[in-house]
Every structure is written in structure tokens, then in C-alpha cells.
Length: 252
Ligand SMILES: [Fe+2]
Image (cartoon, rainbow, N blue to C red):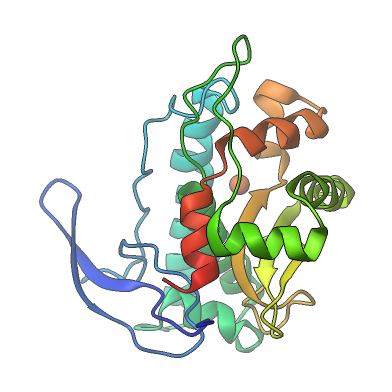
């Protein structure tokens, strides 16, 4: 299985937010192709990637207001603070994945905000509209292909995997993320990270290639779910983008 792959495409923003892709970075251990520019733009700044769907597209599982604030306020703030922290440190031309992979060399501000930019960019891509509703049967949403086989093989069943992943997400103390990664043995592994840390950071206890990412910060669910984190997690399964996760797993 290939786990070494291009991660971010180098590009520029042109006109009204149109992303033009050019050559890809070829560094090793780039785990995920976001198919959008996350490297510094021509002016040296990172930019907020657009959502791949409308703000209300994940209703009723994640509400429009939460998505809009989460993307335009929280994620934008990570991008802005990352750009400021890099400018203050006079650092230019380093890709986001390289910042994360070598994060022990950088300041706390760069670590927190590079992680915030990376994690949220991944999070948006790993969700999709379900088309169902809480009042009617939802479209079955489960992994297939090699990822589905690996989950069944490692966790005996998809339902058992969901229980274990959800338990891990529930146990995150304070703010953080729950992950499914491909570990260095090429096996699926469930884990979590505090704050905006992620499994590609050289400081992370959990290490591997991200396949699934779930934001456990209260800003991800509090407006709709208040303190009911379990309900947010349970509903999130309806909108996991398994096709995208499968690409990450297969290194495509
Ligand atoms: Fe978040």
C-alpha cells in the first residue's frame, strides 16, 4: 500500500476565488491530496479553502449556522494567525504539511494554527451531504472497498469500529480531535490528539496517515448539541465521506 504521496497542490487564487492547480509538491510522507491549494499563495499567505458543499448541506446533522461560523470565523482565524506567526518569525515558502511534520522546530503559535488549518481543511473534505433526514430513513453510510475490508478485518465489524471510534472521541478531555490513521505497520488505528495537534506532527503521540478526522472542539457542535457530544458524534456518522476516506487509505 502506498502511504507516501503528494499532499498539497501548489496553486494560486485567481479572479473570484478560482483555484488553479499547478505542480504538486513531491516531498515524502505527504499523506493526503486535498485537491486544492493549501500552500502559501503568491503573496506568501495561506488562504481559507472553500467548503466543497453549501453551509446548510450537512443539515440536519450539522446545522448551517455552526458550519458557517466554524468555517468563516474559526478556520479563518487559524489561517490568519498562522500567516501572522510565520510573518513574525520571517518564515516563508514552507508548505503546511512540512510545517506540521517538523512542528517541533516552530513556535507554539505556528504549531497551533498550522494544526488548525490542516485539521479543518481535512475535516471539511471528509464529510458530505447525506440526503436523509432525522425523520426519515437515511442513506446507509458505510465504508467499502479496501478501507471497508481493513476496518472489518481489524475491528471484526463496522459497527464495532464505530463503537470504538466513538468511545475514543467521547474520552477526549477538553478540545481535540479523534482520528482513524494508517499506522506505520499499514494497519488502521484509532486515536486522538489534544488541541489542534494531528498525527503527522513530529510531536504527536499518535502517528500515521489520517483517514478520518472528527473535530471534538465544542465550537464544532455546541450551538446545536450543547453538552451532548455523544449525539454530535452519533449523527456525524451519517455524513462521513467514505469515498474520500477510502482514497486516503489507498493513497490515491
Ligand atoms: Fe473546529
